[in-house]
Image (cartoon, rainbow, N blue to C red):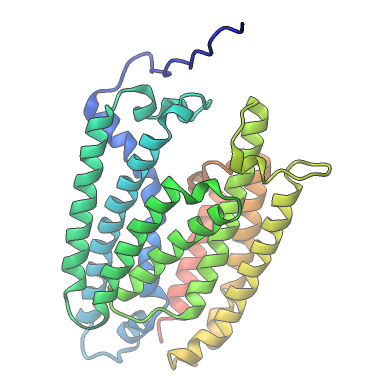
Amino acid sequence: MAPPVVPPAPSVPDRPRPLLVAALVALRPHQWIKNILLFGGLAFTRRWHEATAGLSPTRAPWLDALLVATLAFAVFCALSSAGYLINDLRDREADRRHPTKCRRPIATGELPPGVAVALAVLLFAGALAGGWVLSRRGGDTIYFGYTALGYLLLTNAYSLLLKHYVIIDVIAISLMFVTRVVAGCWVIPEPPSWWIVICTLFGALYMALLKRRGELMAMEASGGTRPVLVKYQSLEGESTGLLDQMISMAGTAAILCYSLYTFYRPVEINALDQRGKLMLTIPFVVYGVFRYLYLVRKMDIGQNPERLFIDRGMIVNLLLWGLTIMWATSGM
């Protein structure tokens, strides 16, 4: 008779973190950088163009839009952190067997499940209250509240169900990014362009697939098993072959859609002077797509995509892209 399998004990740090510190770590504040997408509506709509071209009698409307976008950023930070708490609560047993996730506060026991649940409920309640206030400003702002609620439902559906289904999991992750951009447009309020939706979808899909690739390689190195990752394994040659094909298609689609966006978006907002200027941002997007793939292959950042923001080449590229966008859409 085989001896019973004893699950490994939680990997507690040598010096356990205080409860407050453990709670802050569990919120994953380093992931809040993803919510910068809520400011995309300011850069890629009429607001920035009108403010800098003098088409508006005062710049106050644009400054107001910046303020509400910042408040929307805070709402989504609360929503995403609450979602991470729910995810870590559900996966705490599996995380304890993972080489790096085992140090998450809930997996180590530093953050008791009861405290994590209470914190998640408070964050959800606060975020929904803030979203309700921002969506009651009149006009199309009501759609911000619907979008925030949709993001909440999507994050929880992903944590509880969708992440276990191959391909659906990465599409769900991509839609979370799209939801952020759409929410940033509605809160201004400015109707989101289909171009910004499509560009965000393929860009996020590209990053989600690279994340899965990194997780698959880490799983193989540690000898672990995770059903959804196993399904991504290729049947021939290199185990990541299937994912590499998907990554290639998503990256190509992202570049093509963004390039087409620079052609047609100025027509949509009646800013034809931007047409030639906006195309100058294409090389930065191409470099960013290729640079991220390079970092994943050479530095193994696939599991932690936020690490790309400490890469000097990527930082310089993003700054130049942002400055070029501001100049191209300034209306000057």
